[in-house]
Each structure stands twice: as C-alpha cells, then as structure tokens.
Amino acid sequence: MTSTPPPVRRFEDLLAWQEARLLSKAVWDATHPTDRRIDRGLMDQLCRAARSVMANIAEGFEKNGRKEFAHALTIAKGSCGEVRSFLHGAEDEGNLTPALASELRGRAERVSRLLHGLREGVRRGNGGK
Image (tube, rainbow, N blue to C red):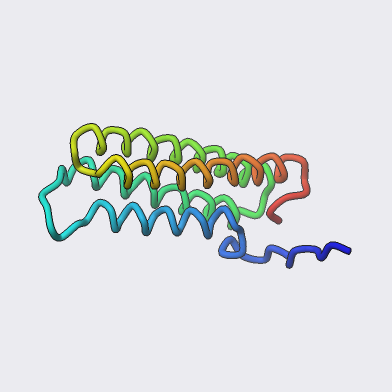
C-alpha cells in the first residue's frame, strides 16, 4: 500500500521550491568566497538567476491559477538554464573549479527536471495545487 503525499498548501511544500532554495544557497556559497578574487558581475548575475528560480515558483503558486502557475514554472525552468550557462562561464573564467561548477550544474538540472514534471502536472490539473 502506498501512502499519498501530504497536500500542498504553500509553495514551501513543493519539492521543486525546496530544491531551488538549496540550489540558490549553494550558488551563493560558491560565488561569495572569502579566500579569492572573482568576477563580481558574473557571480551577481548567477546569484540573481538562482534566486529567480525559487521566486518564480513562489509567485506562480500564489497566483492561484493553473495557467499562471504553469507559466511561472516555465520561467523558472528557463532561469535554471540561465544558471547552468552562467556556471559554464564561471568555470571557463576560473571563477569556479570544474568540480564545483559541475556539482552546481547537476543541482540546476535536478531542479529543472522537477519543474518540468510539476509544470506538466499543473497543466493536466493534478499537480502542485
């Protein structure tokens, strides 16, 4: 017998938002080192893109409409791509080690997959809300 997951009453209950929050924190930690100089402009863009993922999930959820929520999830998924692109740039320029950039890209890809699944569920009327 499988148990049903608890109902989603707040955006904070969404696994996609929880993972996006972890991604945002990991990106912040990686882009604000105390032991070396880095490209602040690129790192700030990277942080803004990561924060945008979780903010768009929350904003769409709070609008209380499936169409609006699905649209916001599409925007959040696009921001995941932006994060991954910035991570390549940060790695190429030596701002992040290849290992750290790869780890963060993996996290962004996981969030992107979660967003895709959530968006499809919302579009079908059986996800997220």
